[in-house]
Image (cartoon, rainbow, N blue to C red; front, side, top):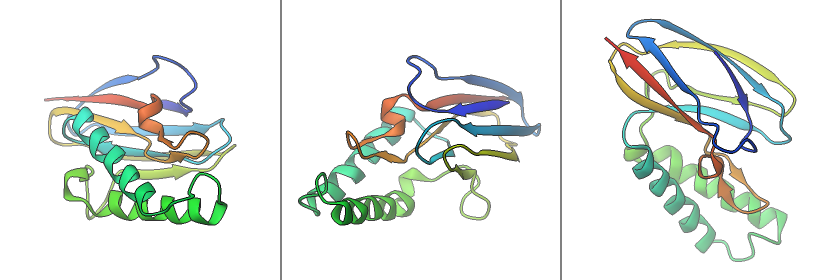
Amino acid sequence: MTFDVGYDRSNYNPQWEVKAGQLIVVTMNNSGTMAHEFLLFSGDRGTILATVRYALALAESHNPGYQNDEAIGNATVDEYTGYHDSWANLSRVGCPDSCVDHDVDPGNTFLFWFVVNTPGTYFFACHQVDRTDWKVHQDKGMWGTLIVDA
């Protein structure tokens, strides 16, 4: 499966369907200008997005001037990341031992693989922050669905 990471394509939310225990190989191509990530989640996508929005808003509230000052902006993103990575309701598939959590820098391609043994509906998303409008990439349409059949 190839995933071209970029949220500039409206209504592009790929849906992949696999069998439980099947090896899933992903080629993540970053044709954009900022880093992106592939996070695999179980749970309700809307609930997780609301939690991520709250984490970003909380970090922003603690860092006045985050939109205009590079250093404060960096501190805001760092604080957001700390919340994001520590909150139990954002548990990612395979954590804590082997998270499906991969990053790819602009202009690069990253190949990775994983297996999901439990049937169900999962979703993948990017939770990086776009500092031009201070939105999380999932909020801008960078997510997809993974259906794992028995």
